[in-house]
Length: 69
Image (cartoon, rainbow, N blue to C red; front, side, top):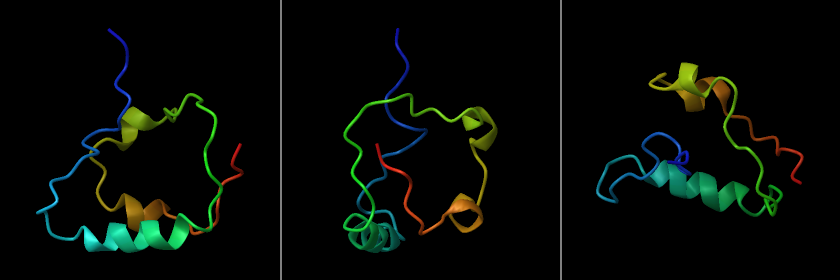
């Protein structure tokens, strides 16, 4: 069996509170950041270590775009 394509618990119910911040984030950065048009290995080397870590957004988010493809 292959690896799952989605990260740990990626889909949240639309009734869960706090989702507005993600809609705003997407609206802001989807127009600024480059599109991903090529599939590559998306699993970071430290993926298992990051499972369950609290506050990842505050600790690791950067508004700087990646390189794109």
